[in-house]
Image 1: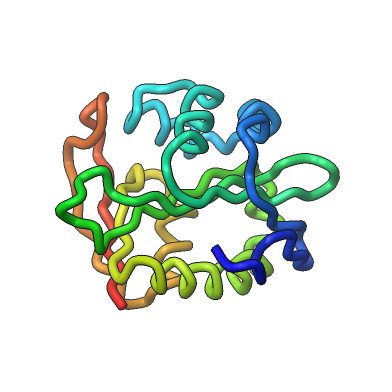
Image 2: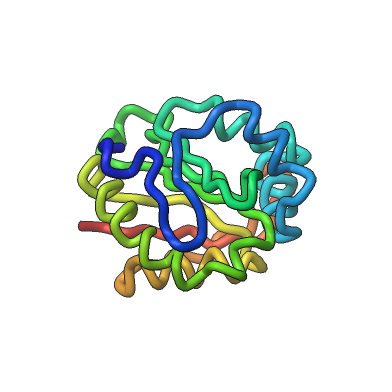
Length: 166
């Protein structure tokens, strides 16, 4: 991401590049919906799932507030090089997300726009009961396409794929 996002402060915290140890900070406080999404989609417990996300190729960021990591998010390329125009945005959070959602929504619009400068198509799958993330995606792109995926991930659980185009 561009330098304008590194160590960017906003009303709810500080956005900075993530490091692997941020997973250890956030994992015990991860929202229930994010815990379930990692478990159902990847088959991983929170710490291993967050480490896996931060170990992928791409850009990874942490939102720090009150001296601790409250959110991790990033953008990874699709593993299939045939779809090199597509990026995989992801986000996990503590319950902190609910207390600063309005402020984070404002900041995340510019981040989403930047992600679209890297990849014209952004897509990923969200567990159907992770309503906060589905609303976040719909807020970032009112024209987003939501596609039901009845059996996704290692647990074959119901997910929703989103596709956002620019």
